[in-house]
Length: 340
Image (tube, rainbow, N blue to C red; front, side, top):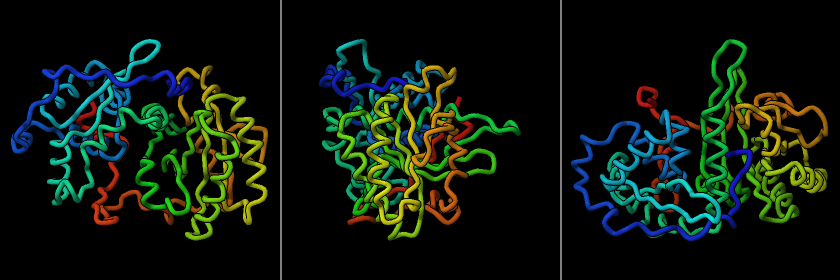
């Protein structure tokens, strides 16, 4: 639940699968007739975001979790996905999915490169199961999956949509020497388009450290000339209040505070919203303490914000970085013809 994010302390080491359940080696040429466009989209999403759960993929691309699990289990038997399930202290966790070597081979073949050039490493991929940041990674994915699936409709009846969702890894490759957001997103509502950096907070670090990241965003804006809002998502209103105080203290001392627009929200605010979504009226710009706004309304809150048309190109093709080929990020939704 996006309004009640999991804590890392509630997770334990993943349960190993029985050896008989592990996928056998598959001739990748046989996959040509088996993988649909949606299947290939799932492979690209897992390459971009490292790990996604059955529930997240169901929210994005299937009518029900049961149907999603059936198809994902088939992809597991094909050998293009691997899976694990963390042991929780309460309840049971959904199945977590990662890219398998055969899946990486498919992606590399599509791009006309080798698996090595793709940057895929099997052991590093599986290490996410034991990562202390797994809860944070999945929290960011929950945030974007919910925003994508439950975007509101505008006055004309057209549904808002997430046009881009870039992973923390991609953001670090692009801007990591200056700023390290948890994700980059582009959100479109009617005639309004908002680019933003997401800072997803689980109250697992000090507020001083959270606020210190504004210096990196200030330097990024100064260096690139692009002013992109920073959105902080906190778990509770109490945490949000503390974060706002720390952020404001740092923000007011920046060389050019208006070059780093900031807004905050608390997941707790969504408890009373029928169809909880980060697009709801939960956002509070840092320079005010009244009148929370909907996500798309933030686009008019900061006059100096760089219009998306001159900002980051979300339709970029594959690029190279340190000898690796970085595939263009997949759109947040799979091909429309295969959603159901």
